[in-house]
Length: 333
Figure 1 (tube, rainbow, N blue to C red):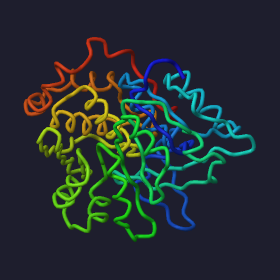
Figure 2: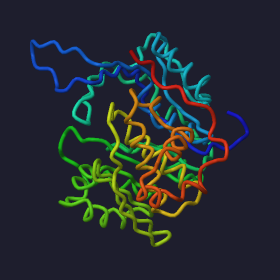
Figure 3: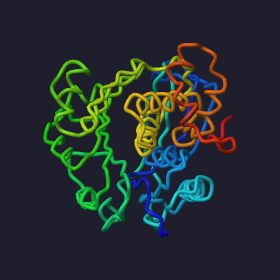
Figure 4: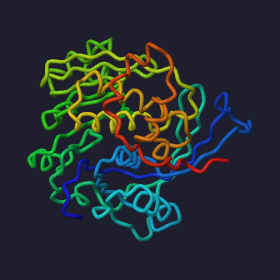
């Protein structure tokens, strides 16, 4: 790793994503459906890493690549195309990169995955994690040792959580929030873990456990509380065409971190994250659908709705003078 401190530190499982779009409805047994489109590219933890890197953040990723075509392709894209630091990552001999097929329909997606647990754990990859400004993590029932080490280094931990297949939603998982600066679950997860029945009630409980609490609500936008500044924000979603929702939550999280590192007010951070996530669903795939500064700039230049111009007027001062060149998206047929 270079001498420059990472803005964002990440670790997790990487997938090769194959996305099929335009299904209209899910297939039933014995039925064949022809899709309107197909895209492919890195997925899983790569979604967060690429989304962060495309906002100019120095991004360090610790993951495992298989010694197969999919692993080599993903490594080349992340290192050479997206300029992500992979010095903490490893290639595992004889292990196959997990593959996910995403079926996109009805503004959502279903996932089918083939793969095995990697031969290196997150703690083995991280060791003593480098000091970083932030870390984007996916907390699970079993705490990761590296997380406490990173927090002790002064790294601000931004965490999300996934669906609990056991349906137990153990509140013990929330104990890990004592290490976190921010927690960004969706409303279903937030309500389940806090034993509440509204996003607002879940946010209220979570705000007692972590300095910055955010609850995303899909088509209803997002709500957040920042106890460090005393701010509250409630932001609607944008009405944008959906091609593929894969990775939208990851783009939201990375964009929120980028705006937070810029010191933006909470409402601006939340609007920016909602916008970036919304722009990502207009393209195939997870990681390579991330809009970056270029995508946000293109959207802002095209906006003529007076209400949106007012709501997102802060972008006039926040966007870099040079948003960079057009970004490559997932190869599509």
